[in-house]
Length: 195
Image (tube, rainbow, N blue to C red):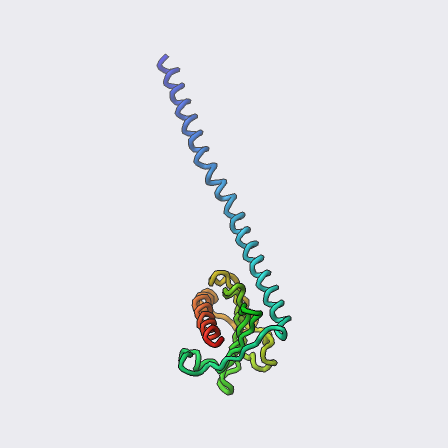
């Protein structure tokens, strides 16, 4: 009799241990199944945002001649010395009260680099940097370079079409993610003061 009770107790304990172990494994498996979906959703959302920004940029480029262009010389007391040393002027393109695009130009004979900043609803969404940008007609997109897509000041995509080799892509991304939104805010302030 003691043997049957002992065997029954062992069987019950084994059942509970097995049942409990199965219960603990199930959530882990579900989490593992969910993780790829989350990454996939994030990728889809990023791709959708990038597509929206690309369309906005193309639309803006297509109507540059219909936008109001304001040429602002980057000199004088209200201009940061760093900006003044790097850039001679900026063209600000707006549609009514909405600023859509800023393009900055270097001092002649110093550099050929241009930078373009695109704004949707007052927020930076795209930056294009071209090291040989002034060879083309002013105002137009200068062609191949480094392209940066932003969402809430976070770099969501970096596309280097310049042909320039990048030694440490992660460090370069971090540097541009902190630098470009900061620069864009400085240019926005200059634009607002020049109105």
